[in-house]
Length: 196
Image 1 (cartoon, rainbow, N blue to C red):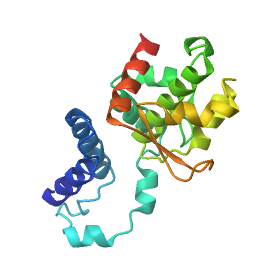
Image 2 (cartoon, rainbow, N blue to C red; image 1 turned 135 degrees about the vertical axis):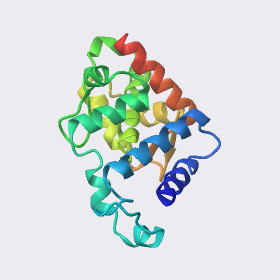
Image 3 (tube, rainbow, N blue to C red; image 1 turned 90 degrees about the vertical axis):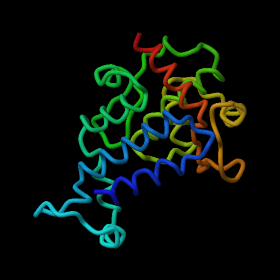
Image 4 (cartoon, helix red, strand yellow; image 1 turned 90 degrees about the horizontal axis):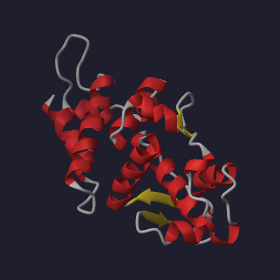
């Protein structure tokens, strides 16, 4: 069990100093809960797995199964955004493995640039809570669904946001987008405002 706790703490500490300590604690708790839920550290006879056997096992399929039910996805997202589970269901469709933003359009800003950033916060927070990477294309599709897509200014709206980091080659739709520490806080505030 000590090896499992150590592994979860190392994973959470890799978030870096730009992430608030309470965010690292939340990440640690979520990683540890996921590992315990999957039974990564305990054999059927109740004895602990050694760290070397944990490292030797492939984790690809286990990672895919961590949030295999809508309830697990709801728990992860509600914990990440610090809202109730039912409130997470108001913001996201969780039936599929990939969360779907389902906010009423009138709750988003009428300005396309600001609405793009708001949608990005929702998409990124849900996908981050579930351990999924987010490309600009993921965000673009949702922005298009809400009819807030402004092709010449879409990338600029994301790149100039103080809450986001855009990685990868310019002009590529496969660029990765991540939340900064301030972005996690902004996403929580925005989600809490939407469900209030």
